[in-house]
Image (cartoon, rainbow, N blue to C red; front, side, top):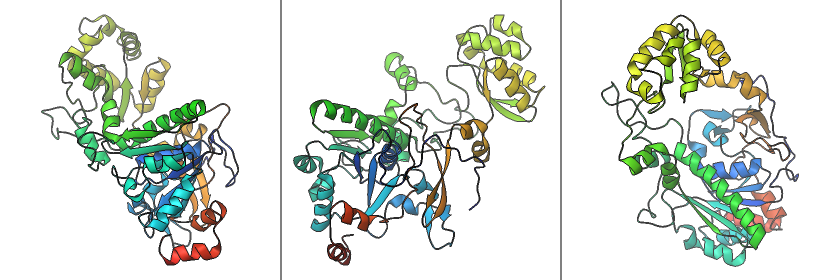
Length: 425
């Protein structure tokens, strides 16, 4: 496998499987979720030290395993895994289980008896049909924190709908505020290039889970957490929605230009483009001086933020003329030296070589017994004391099934074999 990461420094510490370390060490998590939002939440808990067991479909595993190409391949080329799957499943053990069958549901209930957290993202009501809903598991484990992640939530007229990221970006307003301005070539609604609704819902799930852990420490009671992609996406709209709710103003799509802060966007320089961001009059004054035009700060067209917004095109033309005198590195040095936010527009090859990211341990190489070296993006969470951990690479589907049944549920080899023969595992 080609090594894209000359530096493999990690802020977190790798730990042998089973070694209790990390702020959530000792917490048992059952990850029944698939695709992105739920697995991301469970992975974050694993980074924080929780013991995460991923429950997957017998035969095929998580749907995300098949979402490719590209693929991570084992050194002998006999096994492959989706690169997408690697992004949200490190630090977990994997068990395959058919809990739609009564024997499988009973195994899952046995695992839930001493679990701390369950994460699931099935359509509302699905798990309850198998005796695995919140009420069912709460009855056998009142301390259980049960987090449900769905497209539209556990209540309301949309609660029985399935909801994927792209759909929720559309319904939740993200595509209404993303894209080129009306009248431009190619104008129209545009999705964000990463699954932003999934990611936000996953992060919201972690916030809710950790809050529920504090509540349980105080009261001794678990609870049901209801996280919706739709809610999470709408909460991301911030000023775009606030402007409409409070003034009736519909902020337009502005492409790479910020709708209210000017100058704030992509600008041409002698050898390409840079991103320049200013958010107040003080920053603009520093920018004007750095570009050799301190008089702009006193120009009635540009002096105040609202003036620059009204005269955006005139200012942009003047800036392009000034910026054409130097290249990307020149202007990054000059503008950052003047305390003006400026940076390159990086591609993936640039990101993995970035000295700041490498210094902060954002690229980690984990070793899998079958897949070999697997490269992952490290956790963005940085702690002075309770550091994140990277105990293991993303697992193969069902890799730890026998181990879990034998060690955690004390099943005999014969009992495990019988479950496998019945295709329960």
